[in-house]
Structures are given as structure tokens and as C-alpha cells.
Image (cartoon, rainbow, N blue to C red; front, side, top):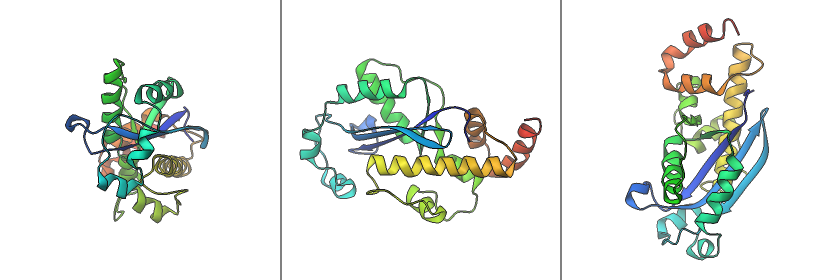
Length: 207
């Protein structure tokens, strides 16, 4: 298990990049403690932007749904309070991190500089040789079922959380650990897969 609480975050958005004007349409934040999801914050978001037809087709999130949703200012305030001081994680974390940073910047807030934990990078290091590391393909390979529609924030965040828990459990079993630090997982994610076994042998030898 992880020694610290972590919040698994997932955004649905109107596009791929906030630098090109894309905004968030939905957020899910799931707190993981001792391998269990203990709290959830989920909300649609009204950013006052048009939802492209292809995004509605992919996610099922329509213009009407976001028009009736709470304002981005209200949602972000709740999200910030929910996260508190816990570490953040996401699948393909660089995507969600840039949207959180952009939306926080609009509010004049600092999103923090500590690195996120990325379940995609961690899976690449701990499960080398997979045909794909997309969330849906990994979920299928590991027997993780979506509770709801894929490409909706809560369903994606829940599968990502269960993926992270499973990866951590595998690591603990393989190296006879009761729990591991988030910092260790971040470090693993920065290595090449070939260097991970030797690193873990050394890092966990005295643990």
C-alpha cells in the first residue's frame, strides 16, 4: 500500500491543450487511503465555452449539461479544498496537470510544483511489454472494469485509482513490503523500465 494519501484526478475537457483555449467540462477527484477509495468529489463544470460535437460524441457531455453545471470558480474552490495537502495522481498526469495549472492560474492560485504520480508511466515501468498503456486497454488486461461510461471523469478516475492500487500491491508483494512511499513511485516513473529492478533491489534492501 501507499504510505500517504493520494488524490486521483481526472478531467474531461473541450480539447487537448489549455494553451489553445481548451477548458474543463468535468472533474473527478478520488482520495485513496490504505488502498481504498475513501472520498469522492465529482462535478460537471460550466466554463462558459462551447462544447465541440466530437467531445459530446466521445464523452456524452452536452452543452446543456455544462450550461446547467456549477461555475468553474465554484467547482475549483471545492476541488482545492478537497485536495488539501494530499499528493496528486492521474493516468497520463501531464495532461491533467496542465489543465489544473491553467485553471488555478485563472483564479490567481498556485497549483504547486511537487511532481504528480502518473499511473501510465508507473505501468510502463512495472508492467513492461503491454500492447498498450491506454487506460481502457490496461484495464482490460488487468481485469479492471469501468463502473460507468469510459471518458467520463468519475469512471476514468476510479479505474485509474484501482490501477494505481494494483500496481502498488504488486510492488509490495514482489519486494516484501508492507507499504511504499509516493516519492519512490515517482522515482520509478522517471527511470527506464530496464533500470527499475536494480533500483528497487537497492532502494528497498534496507526497508
